[in-house]
Image (cartoon, rainbow, N blue to C red):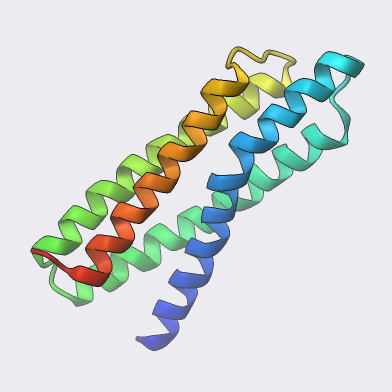
Length: 136
């Protein structure tokens, strides 16, 4: 079971990198696109980072469910799963922004993207609290 935890944690760390970095990268991509009118290397990097981390998210979710099943789903696991579902929804919204940006559509302001980025930090802190404290 330890190897499942290791894979889970490794994939979660990779996924979190994207969750924290892609909204910020969208700000720089937006600025670069406004200056050059092209897709550019920042856009390419942002798109590739998002796409790569999608696989990590799937593995993290699958190994997380495997671990949860081995714990017989105590109440704290249900709370964690709900928070992870919200974080996955946040990630999907990020993906929609990346796909639009790839078409040259940047609808969100820099301020919105910064706040959007911080929401994910709050979500991760909540997940970590539930996992470490196991309040339920």
